Length: 401
Image (cartoon, rainbow, N blue to C red; front, side, top):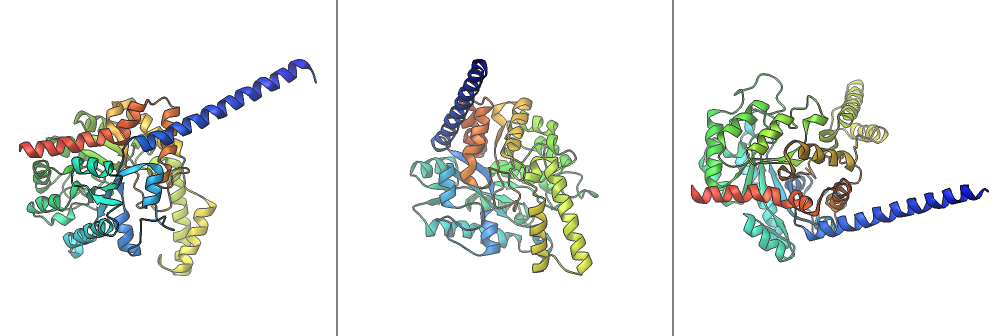
């Protein structure tokens, strides 16, 4: 072998080894930062998971679901907002407030069963203290304003029960505002008169206004109505999913930032890439055709087994790098102060990205942000400082009202 070729091989080997060493050092740094900084996640659907699947011991590594104490600690997750999710069906059947209460009680049960590991955080000061004691803080956000049941006094009630934000609607229009998922005729053409009162009262009692799930018209009207910054607790950038109103357009992200607010990026693959949406849609069409051909319903085990096979053959998963793209996009639009984590763990089923399957994977996302040039100060803002700024501003406004 010629000497020149041997030298080229040696140089290539040294470069590759150096790159691998740098990658390892960056991953080590990401793990260190995940443990060093408080990590807040804006939306985890554990309460509904426990309601549907039965109460389980989440102080240990659970065989199913996304969130438990062990995986949270491994990934450095300190303050996951527990979603008190009330489906839109309760707007028809009644009992929305009772369901919200039941889910709050399930979070309380977790803290009573494991007082050395979990405690409910009613405010920022609670969260700081709980985390300093080595426990995981459990603030709560209510997904869907239906439990207010048309009564403004229920805002004070839920504030006292520990609700720190309210997602104003969910999959259907309610008496507060229109939903992004209702693509037909809008009930209110945005925010209702009652909804405007709800926003003002939320400001007054110190509950953060969450615009995830609302229609575009409702979003802009909420921005005009609120006197404090708002959040999108689990939304992503529509730039990557054209036509998907559930995500936020560039103009909406800019308006949210002008208000001082924060968008918390949803990790669900169909929120992150158009390719994942298309795959999910194709899989759904195949399963629906199977149900039709065999005269079966979605709860039939044959349908479930068939759906599992279809999804395995055509996986919908995007990659952790695709999620990082959303952070890049928001930062390019409005700067580092207006983006955070809003995973939707336990809420998006088996659609989570490669290398971001549960809270233990937070360091993987931090690694890719570091790789793209984000500073430690940037990472700290994303991990918790941005969203806590809004949380504090909401509390302070309420104290002065």
